[in-house]
Length: 318
Image (cartoon, rainbow, N blue to C red; front, side, top):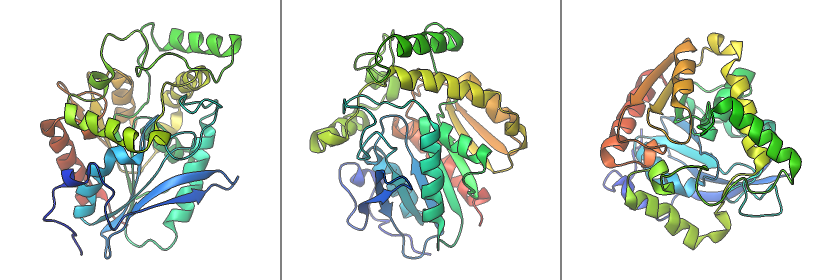
């Protein structure tokens, strides 16, 4: 098994695309073109598909990709439809719009089918935030068939200053009374929050700055707030998944990392769902951890990677 570039620290890749990685495109069945990232290993121990959250781009996770690649995993990722380098679903390039998350699940299912062809060894899927929600939904639908799945701070419920039920009602009302694709709020990750965007995402100022650096280099990949339609759909879709009886019968080995103090997604709902899954390991980060666990301070991030490495070693089999 090849373990490339072990002399280089994963942090060396935070602001550059690896020389042996490729950025390309993939066309969905309806012709929509999504931007993709591939970092192969010549003789891999397996293949890992990473999917980020709302507004994310794969550049934000190059450091994590480097960690996994150095341990023998070929890594692939794509920007979700409507964000990053995968076009937009509204006329405003800074608004993250979607009125039906089913299109994301369809993209994931089709990409998974194409990507899986000819790949020997275990195929793993890892999702952060919205990516975690979409992966779990795809698993329940039987749309993907990984050997194992990892969900990091999954969006299985949303934080709202008025609670999820009223938050959903308000979002649906706001989507109906105006253009549903208009921005739901200003620049922060959520309304009515006294926390800065950085503190909602990570306590590590340098990793937060990496994201801003990439936006300076590639301003076209930057996204701002969600639309009212996206907010309404997120409340509705997560509420439906939380009550899905198929959760109790899903047999895919799963690891879930949850930040108890997450200011963006509902950690309590994620914990409840993890405990209902037949084959799930739940790891909680009780303090000093914001939403982006894999972009947190070294102490938090290192613990998360140790847990992920252990899970892959024990559960990731073809």
